[in-house]
Length: 84
Image (cartoon, rainbow, N blue to C red):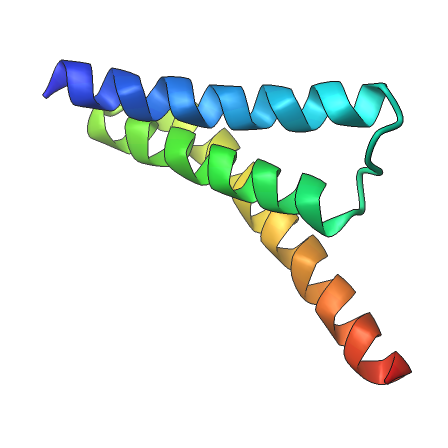
């Protein structure tokens, strides 16, 4: 079980670091769908890991990051829908 949660944690961490790396190199913008998707998925995975190991402060932090990224994606979609 611990090894499974470690894999989830490393995958989430990699996704967040890739997003951050690409954003700091001006490859993508922080409001781009790819960036927000990587952050949402990565944070979601880390939130699952935090929940499974009962690390509540980390869980709350990752849920907040996940929700922020998802809300950002929803705003992008609503802006896209309005401009069509």
